[in-house]
Amino acid sequence: MSKRLQVLIVGGGPVGMGFAIELGLRGISSAIVERRTEPHRIPKGQNLMQRTLDHFDSWGIIKEMRAARVMPPESPIGGITTYGDLMSEYWYSPPQREVVKDFFFQANERIPQYCLEEVLQNKLNDLPNVETYFGWQAETLAQDDTSVTLNLTEVDGPGQQTLEADYLVGCDGAHSMVRDTIGIERKGSDFDQKMVLAVFRSKELHKGLKRFPERSTYRAMDPELNGYWQFFGRIDVGEGWFFHAPVPMDTTAGNYDFKTLIQKAAGFEFACEFDHVGFWDLRVAAAETYQVNRVFIAGDAAHSHPPYGGFGVNNGLEDARNLGWKLAARIQGWSGEALLNSYSQERHPIFKETGEDFIAARIKREGKFFQTYSPKKDLDTFLEAWEKKQAGAAGDVLSYEPNYEGSAVIEGPTGGVCSAHGKHTFTAQAGHHLAPLELSSGKNIYEEISNDFTLLALDGEDAVTSVVKDAAETQNIPFNIIRDSYADGRTAYKARYILIRPDHYIVWCGEEPPTDTAAIIAKAVGI
Ligand SMILES: Cc1cc2nc3c(=O)[nH]c(=O)nc-3n(C[C@H](O)[C@H](O)[C@H](O)COP(=O)(O)OP(=O)(O)OC[C@H]3O[C@@H](n4cnc5c(N)ncnc54)[C@H](O)[C@@H]3O)c2cc1C
View 1 (tube, rainbow, N blue to C red):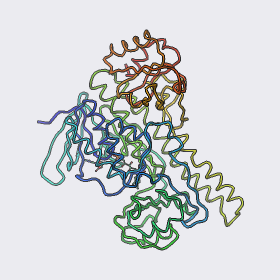
View 2 (cartoon, protein in one colour):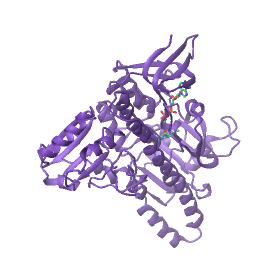
View 3 (tube, rainbow, N blue to C red):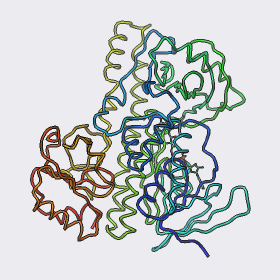
View 4 (tube, rainbow, N blue to C red):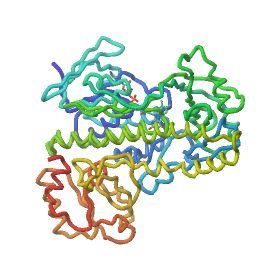
């Protein structure tokens, strides 16, 4: 007989584990199936945006994540960009995530992915309602009107299992079996370019880069490479590195001189020891939808792309945060089907634009820059353009503000759309992430806000808060109220009433009470 749970998760990478934590903390039973028994020893997703650290705070693992940092706390996360190799006289250190730090509660972080995965796995072990099948391969799945069935086999053993659940989420990476089985196509930009990913150790490279202010990453932009990066990332201070760069399509681990490649990109000779050499194709691929009936996809299964800009883990964990509370709401009976449908409706356009406008367009834009400007061709024009490029480097960070203005479960502006483009501001806006501000107690609002629905009432009238509370309670929606004065820095929200979802996006806000409270509450949970 098969075992029945509420949700099955295929894939125990960062996104699958994040999902299981989000669900487990909401009292939902799940099983997570992962073929590996140990994390990959490739550092991969290291740059974690502020919002991702907010998830860890909500999951109660912020201290453990900070402690998992390999680089010393004082070492800066930012990077250096050079024209040509790393010994070039033309270089700059662009402002990065620090330009938006005030709009998030938690500071950004840099942690090798395997360290992050260890912290997530420890948290999973503390959640009694999450069953873990590590060392098991998900083979086939089927769904009908009431359930999803998954067949597994043990990777190093004879074991076979069938699991059943109300819903299944495929977090099984770029080559997702789940996505293929439910027949979701992918679209995007294929650059038809092979990339190498090397992990190596070199103390001499570390010493050779002392000419720069201390940084974590180094991007050598060879003008011949069409905007593709030659990228060095520190794993620790002093020795460990990962590197990626374009290579000819017929390159294999055995037929290419990777040492010469990294020395050429660095601009000097140095001793090094390789620990790993692998390859990936430079393409941006987004699934056409993230849901087919009872089956969903998230993380790299839904969107994959080159590691340019650090969007992979960050977007994947946002998928988990977005869908987690919605699945819990549906299973616990306090939402309509439209809430589940809003997952794909909200998250799909975000990644489509992230992939095309922030990753593919950047490659093309930089490729054109290096075709147009060269210090050898015309030094003055080059220097002017290089200066402008440096000044505009933070542009993408400032304009990357994923929001759900057009969602069916948000009381957004007329004509609003769900988009990765937005503007960071303290002004509360429906469909946008709530910026952190200080309460009169001296605490940050993020220290008080729960993972349920919250009404923030700033000098709000009791009659109004009672109406909102009654409307939520009528639907059995877990709900809290935070009351404070509409004074000091809090006036920056420019709204006295702000209704916030469990993932800390704003459903509705206004200076005046809503005209139809019950309708807004019903809409927020897809009824
Ligand atoms: C060099 C490099 C640098 C990167 N840098 C960044 C960065 O700075 N910031 C960032 O946000 N992202 C970065 N990324 C991207 C990031 O690593 C990925 O986006 C992230 O791993 C996606 O997580 P995931 O859980 O969706 O998928 P994965 O990590 O691919 O996990 C999927 C899991 O599913 C398992 N699985 C697959 N099929 C099955 C099956 N049938 N049965 C059981 N298990 C299965 C796999 O074993 C795997 O563990 C980088 C990637 C690389 C390669």
